[in-house]
Length: 449
Image (cartoon, rainbow, N blue to C red; front, top):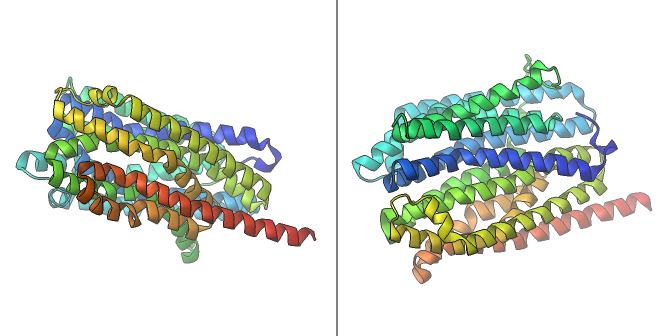
């Protein structure tokens, strides 16, 4: 990886962030493509089954992000400190942990897909069967999802964000094309949608392997003695990324169960549309956070706090602008968005989706700042404040809100839970950021005195 501190920091920021936003946008389209083709090829029942299964995808993806982001952060900090001897060990440890996690999830998917479907809220034999089918295929490819996240993080942090982007977008393109082929011409239904999604990360990894073939890599698998403390630090550093991703699955479960009670299957179908669109927006915010991670970690490891402040400020401003754009689109064009996923022209589904989009998307004015701040603390190996922010928006606030607000506002209370959570989380996040920079400014003043 080239010495970032000898490059123009603004140009480096724009390069990494733009490429990683595109990468994460591509990743989010895995699920959105399924939503579109399932909605138009299978109908509302397919949307219900897909939305019930999505929390498992969030969990698998979260594990991959935890291992990938955690280990890649240590990798970049080690480069910044000039500790080249530890790079292969960090990667090898992460690879083994990722493979073990994938194998365990695959076994669970083969053995327990039906009980898991029922536990997630599937009711009626038709819905249970579709949910079980999607889950089985998704979990069968869990090794590919997790290892792909690991490789993307390392290739990006090893100075090749462009290849990371190409790999992710190639997987996305494969998923979109084969979603159509499997669902429509081949009539494979939800099995086909899941199959296309599962193979996509394998395509991405094939592209990422060019990093090794071109011999640009500063990391590789090698026989090494595992360091328990280093593995633990990897997990702690990546834990906020896991919470941020996996909590979206937990939220979907809680929302599904609450909405089923209030509005039935059509309410869950409407939430399926909203949640999967929200995943795209969150993925773009995450792209900003992951884009600043390598340069933050490298700059922090090299002691360049001026760069650290500049990078965080740029990420926060960009997240705020994107959040405003997402809110305005959701507020002014909800009918047009809902119609894309409503092939049956169900008036009740359209009405539920329109109301939900207008309220739920208000939260994006604040969500991007929270996600970037979470990534900021994780990138400089400060897991405690990163964990606090992730936990607040991931479960500590939103679950009580989604359980309490419907009692006062009905289904609108469910949609309001997200914005309320993001506003309170942002207040806490800003306090933590101001404290951090104030502390380091004081230390800098003492050193120069």
